[in-house]
Image 1 (cartoon, helix red, strand yellow):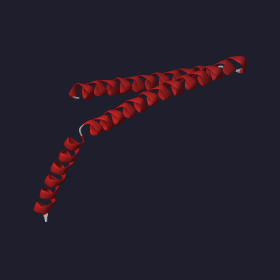
Image 2 (cartoon, helix red, strand yellow):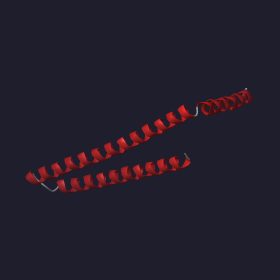
Image 3 (tube, rainbow, N blue to C red):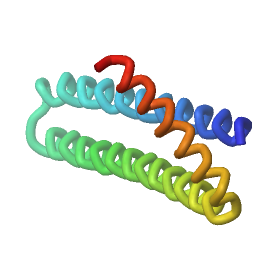
Image 4 (cartoon, rainbow, N blue to C red):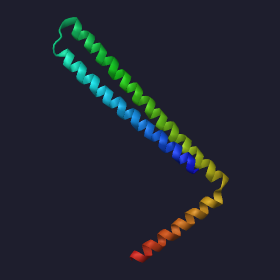
Length: 111
C-alpha cells in the first residue's frame, strides 16, 4: 500500500506541474495578445480576439482534464479503502479502538 501512496504522490506532483505550466503559458499568451492588440485595428483585432477565445477554451479544457484525473484518483482511493474494510473488518475495528483509546488517554491527561 505504501508504493500506492508514492504513486499517488507522484501523480499529484505531475498534476500540479501541469496546472502550473498551463497557468504560466496562459498568462504569457494573454500578455502577448494584449500587447499585440494595443497596436491593431479592424480585422487584425478581430483575429486577436479569436486567438484569445481559443486560448481560454484550451486552458479550460486542460483544467477540466486535470479535475477529472483528480476525481478519478479520489474515486480509486475510496474504492481501495472500501475494499480493505470489506476484506479486513476486524483490523479496521481494532485499529479504530486503539486510536479511540489513545485519544481518550490524551484527553484525560489534559483535564
